[in-house]
Length: 192
Image (cartoon, rainbow, N blue to C red; front, side, top):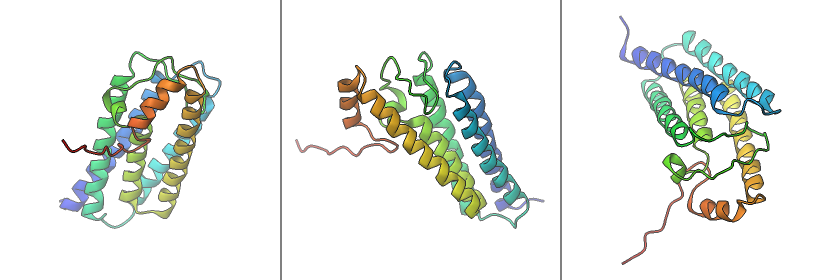
């Protein structure tokens, strides 16, 4: 018989691994297959796989995980899935370049989750890796997650620089003022 903690840990692990697999499969379809930078995508997938396998190993061979850590990890995986699917729907008819590909999209997406944050796909990935780190409580998994986070911050900044230097620069600058990079921008409420 499984305890409540074990059930939630198993559910969190299944959700986190399912999200990682979905991210990997969707990336192969959603992002430009013709990019010369596609190997970078595969390298990020390998790092993500290492984080996932490390999480599986740790959860399988350590004492029962904390109920609250497992519950928050499960919520992180669910949030990642919701955000990822919302971002994919918002960009379904657009061709996005591969991370660090130097490709400027033809249009600026400002609906769906892009209404609040500029990089919801990166946030979805990071939520999932945060869940893995939290569930495993492993310094090594946390280190992998920090490495992925640093890469996504660097990629986001580079993509934004390219957009600002493109013909869409003024429109993107305006969009950027109203949305947060990875977290929604707090808007001031004007007094009526």
